[in-house]
Amino acid sequence: MSPAPDDLGPVRVRIPTPLRSYTAGAASVTAIGTTVGEVLDDLDRRFPGLQFRVVDEQRRMRPHMVVWLRGERCRDLDADVRPDDEVVLMQALSGG
Amino acid sequence: MTDRLSTMSDSDVVLRIGTRKGAWTLTADTDRRCWTLSAPTFLGHVVQHVIADPRDPARVLMAASTGHLGPTVFRSDDGGVSWSEATRPPAFPTGDALGRAVRRVFWLTPGHHTEEGTWYAGASPQGLFRSEDHGETWRPVDGWNDHPNWSTWAEWPDVEGTPDGSMLHSVNVDPRDPAHLYIGLSGGGVFESTDGGADWKPLNRGCAADFFPDPDVEFGHDPHCVRLHPLMPDRLYQQNHCGIYRIDRPSDTWERIGDAMPRDVGDIGFPIELHPRDPDVAWVFPMDGTDVWPRTSPDGRPAVYVTRDAGGSWTRRDAGLPDRAWFTVKRQAMCVDDGDPVGVYFATTSGEVWGSADEGTTWAQLAAHLPEIYSLEVG
Image 1 (cartoon, each protein chain N blue to C red):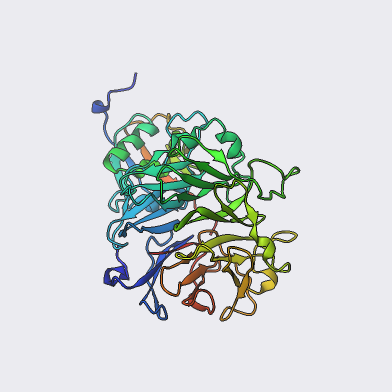
Image 2: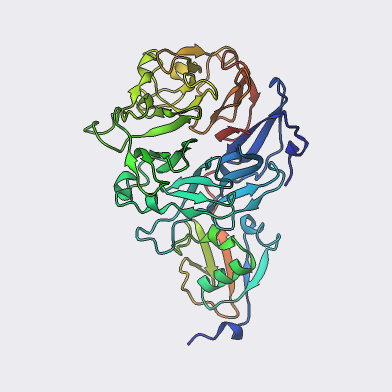
């Protein structure tokens, strides 16, 4: 059973440069959540609009957006996030 | 963010330029001879369309995305000096039965003059969205997006049918009736609603669809740009993938006025622009639609063509344009001002802006070396 959000410690989230306009320039912020999706939901509460640039309205990670979690690429919003994890948001650059 | 718009006077003419790498403005005094290019705004963002609200020109909307980030709309209430993001950008409902997600906000149109704050947005895939608060929040136009025929009309899910994907564009609002709307789908055709977007019907009779095995189809056409004349709202012009057309309602049949173009130039192109006071006058920028469809100036000899008799005849206008150049002008990259004589402008995918202060008779380059230009609007 997942812990209640109030029992969670924050996880660290690294913000790529294209999204730092939402975090007042911060490269790293904290967020609460037991899954990638919950972390993104919490980020969006604190930094409105950020999530929609990463996840579409059908709750799918946008193409070429990726989360790194425990050293692995992850595009599953239901993936578990542990209190000591670092969530790295990344955008692939392509196309010139 | 700031740019030199903060120093504008009421008499300045402003061109808003949307590019693959940001937005710029060009500003001139009313003589339209000396133009000043601004610093970039949103440098590096993909700016599909920037357009001011004619009901309140200090309000400007921008359709943008950024690299692989999701699409959104930025809005300014001070002529482009500062910008904020829509708190609810255009999006299909979560849980949409077709699983649609907006990949690109392609087109922005201010709403009816009696409906302050209303805007329409066309998207890829071919969704239609409406804002009633100056672009701050957007809601789907369900009558279009959820129309029983939408999947067929919008070629869903074959949204990669064209290299840039299918898009909804050319939202035209009848100035006599805010519930009377026309839209264009590339591909899909022209569609009309007389009930504020609750229901829609194709309006393509007479238009060629040469790319189909059976070109005599009710929909599936490829209008590139559709313009309704504000002083004669029953008259619409269309630059189509297969030619130039005009319709005078209540007729439901388009007339191919591009047949009057020179045969060696043809009537293929993307934009079409109308004289703000004379419904018989329109400008097009022909491009090569032969063999593999280069869609550059035919024979590398760029020219604007103007009709002054509603398409009965066309006159070449190339004074001042390069003798040889292979320009491509996208559907949102041509515009006119309301001066007398009318100023006509176009912008190229090679980053050049050209203008004419005499209704297209003579041309001058207003800017060069910009990124690929998607859109050009006055205001």
